[in-house]
Length: 297
View 1 (cartoon, rainbow, N blue to C red):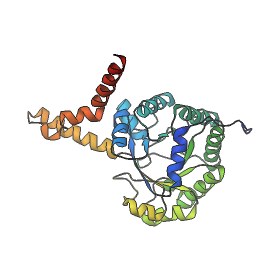
View 2: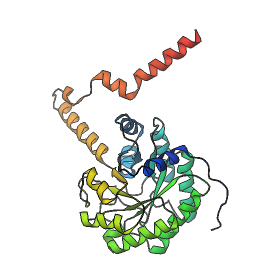
View 3: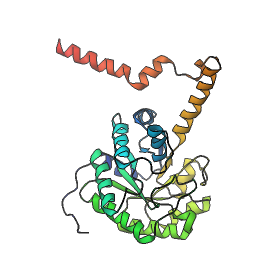
View 4: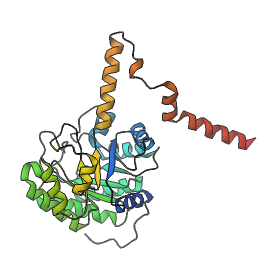
């Protein structure tokens, strides 16, 4: 591939994310699945979020994260989720949706939509959730070609590249570390070795490969759930919580529906209506509408 020497399109959210990473502290990152969940994450004071492919597929399609969502659907979901946000959001670019040219188009699309970073992984398409059955990875050359294409696209459309490898389960930790190091040498900004099985393996990831590392804190998954202070001590830069909000929301909805079906009172499950309106934005909407009306009088 020839190097594009033109200056990349300016992306303020990518710069914001670079600034956060430069602080050297662990970034706790609850993952969103739509505009409302993204908005709640920002309202709670978090500095960064990520559009989870697992959660977005469940929310948009009511289907599992098995490659059913198309590139266009994921990009549309990302644009919607970013609408209420003033904090950076990363997005799940899966396998790049095809060959290296598709990877470049995927990266450029998310950059032009305003995403701070895009994740590209080395699974065989259609991909699988990292902690479920049936996943496998492509060979080294194809994995490196994907990240090379992503970095190439970044030269014209500013965005950070989150390079993910799922090689740990199928090919062992050494292969996963080899791929992570190769991704870093190519120019990936953030590294994600999925599914380490122990705390020692998590430590080895950060000690063996220089760079910003992301830990995946998936409740019920194969990786130990560690407190944020422990993750920071090990050397991780980001702690992702991919299913925490989706799982909490589903549990609450199931409990409420069960009570409603049985004729029981549901008030104990509900937000106060005033708080509901405030968090969704009704109060802010009316303040802005009244201010516009007053200025026009």
